[in-house]
Image: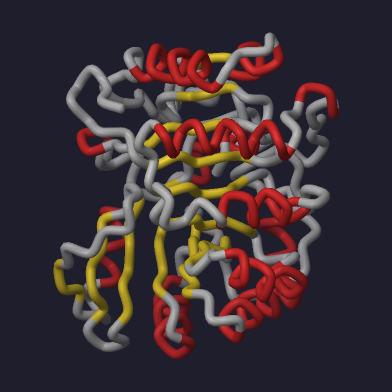
Length: 328
């Protein structure tokens, strides 16, 4: 699949549910209304669409949410997709908040998952509860170490929040180095109404990196995982540190990704509204060949890039849909 700008699309992020057992302040409102069950694709429909994308050239699949591990029987989907590794699919990964990992880490490894991303924005139990609104850090930490014990490579994802966790990045780098985890810092993105002002949350990672360089030796790295992060090596820990900067440095020029929601909507860009309704195609009785035609048609409309901006006048999200619906 080649988009209008010559970029090969080889990476599909799949939101298996919009539901989550946390309510992180930068992701969703506390009183979220979730999708009706009939709007959500079955696990069989999701697996079928993923296999179509693999036939079209997708080599990396990432399962996301919401929180993917709260979806009932989700391991059925993971095992179905894990069986495609080596038959076109190169890698199956997962992004999770870690709350359910203690239950699923071994099964994920057995199904073919080798790397996971875990969201952890603080090492403080009090701050964790405030950021997630009702989460318990002990469950997430237990999940992280269960994943490590199962043989999964763990990368920690941390959203940089002004005035909230910006004094913890040194501690997170040291903690990740001690436990053998890579770390990725992420700028907050203006997606969906969250009941808070993102102007107050936004912390540019260009500023964070300059602060970190006072303590750590950050060596440039050509390390890539197929996503938008740009990495450095932290000489003192030997681990990788990534920066995802949708606001301060647009990462669209090399975008190889599209996103499939749990409703079967295909978004060609995280920060644009261009989309294709694959659920309608599926449920109209389309053959796999007809689904492939619909996907190719959608890819032909992939935009050059997103237009993320935090509007200090309107103070409104750039995109109305929540990250939890699109697939974080």
